[in-house]
Image (cartoon, rainbow, N blue to C red; front, side, top):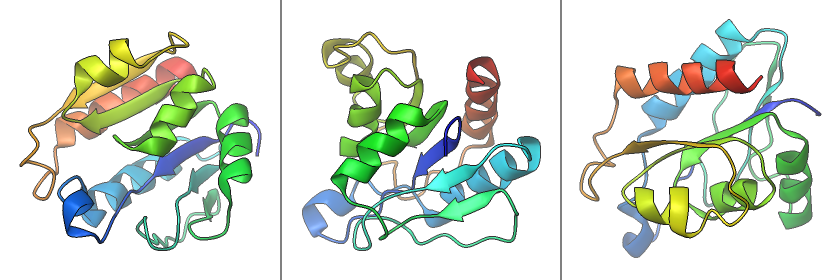
Length: 153
């Protein structure tokens, strides 16, 4: 799965962490747009069974690995990927450590772009407020994601 585009559709159930869940509809739209625009590239969703949306779609270049990987496989996928997209969480931090260009949606831009981007990885960031995750669906953000992916393929 070399040169694929990874999406981490984070969705945690616990009350403490669920505040940072972006809506499933947002991730579906991102995946659909990526599959349409980059039809010759594998678009892969990854995450744990209990920590990510299980997104299905009909595109031939889409692979859903939610609940089907372990931490080593996640690192391997990230290392071989061209671009990673996701809300701020552990998997996007792993992609930054591996030097894979990463687009993050979250509320801690300074932390992820500068303070804890130890490998100085190229990163795009859409900043939202901590209380804005649940109702987030911004077409401008999706457009920026698409531009970021185009710049890094």
